[in-house]
Image (cartoon, rainbow, N blue to C red):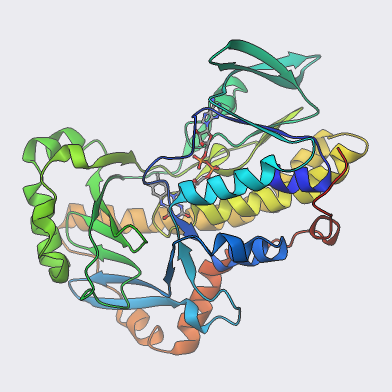
Length: 395
Ligand SMILES: Cc1cc2nc3c(=O)[nH]c(=O)nc-3n(C[C@H](O)[C@H](O)[C@H](O)COP(=O)(O)OP(=O)(O)OC[C@H]3O[C@@H](n4cnc5c(N)ncnc54)[C@H](O)[C@@H]3O)c2cc1C
């Protein structure tokens, strides 16, 4: 997103992607109303939404003691009053395609960054490897948006401090049936020892089954039967197809992490997205946070890159503007992690407090909570100058 916004503003951008394509499974598929409104502002929403997606209206959680609909996006006053669930690979293909059309911009796939280039205490570029060997690339700024296991973060010696995730997730897919509850969209089901995240989508149900951190070898040893049993007990309407999960090889293990670096930059280098702050999948807002980082970064960086250059103050300004929202989102995620851990340790499943049940029955409360989730704690606007840049930009 940042590469596209800068490229659209007339900055010459090279985007390096380690893999040949974006086709990886289970990367988070949710495009929130904020992201859809931004794409609309950029003139891209209509063509993106012509691709297969599922419009999720509700966010709910279920416990043995009852269910709570915490968010009802349908009550938002926007044409995009839903979360679009679309395989992330399709979204990235779409955006990368639009980016590569911009003058002065190029997308290099199969290009893995292996080192930072430095001069006079500043990052001045990257070294990357592709099928033809190693290459050096110099630029006015390097942006590390290389995700939770960021190589650039390590190279820059900017350690991420863990805030205490206590679970891992096993992901797999189950087919959708026409008889499935029509309002099941984004649902969390809490049991005593595990929770399950269920996500609708054009390719069926994505299921995320939690394991205690480091519990993978034991779970693998136990096989898929305990997973099927959990699903049968907590999501009875799925039980007619849990037999389709036959083997652990059909699952993908994803280590849940919640962490943040103290400083998001070094002279000449900026970290954004998961590289700066890993967001847990609970709440499904990692993509939203990464997109909002991109908007704030573009607002600050485009004038600097097109003008006097990027100073340390500009980089600090990006962090200052985004960090409070990230802190709030991560604090909520840590709280949910703690509740899940307490449930495991005490043997008492999570139960929605009576007050929460009561207040979320009020439509206005569900609308407010949908708004908070749809736009995040902060709602950064794209600067008018960037919004109005023509797509046939200068280089
Ligand atoms: C299991 C799981 C489920 C999730 N579910 C959701 C969800 O439902 N909704 C949601 O909003 N968020 C979800 N998230 C979080 C979300 O996926 C991330 O927050 C988001 O993808 C972060 O975007 P990013 O661009 O910072 O990093 P990434 O999406 O991780 O992208 C990093 C990119 O950098 C590339 N790269 C890495 N190293 C190099 C290198 N050395 N050189 C060149 N390229 C490199 C990678 O190949 C990758 O394409 C989930 C996360 C996990 C782990």
